[in-house]
Image: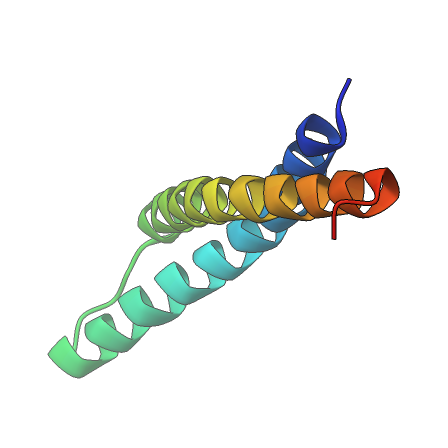
Length: 85
């Protein structure tokens, strides 16, 4: 297993988890704000579904970025240990 693979996995998992939490919070906040603006209410099932969708989108986006960043860090560590800097 290479430094690049370990870095990619670590970055993807870590930022994916953070992205899921942030994505669900943002999605439910935006949906609630729009509902208040329109003067309507959002039922429990709808807000749960919106939270799940936001969590999925946030997790996917952050894990993609985190994986690429982690691979870069892993490769940088490898080059440093190899003496390539």
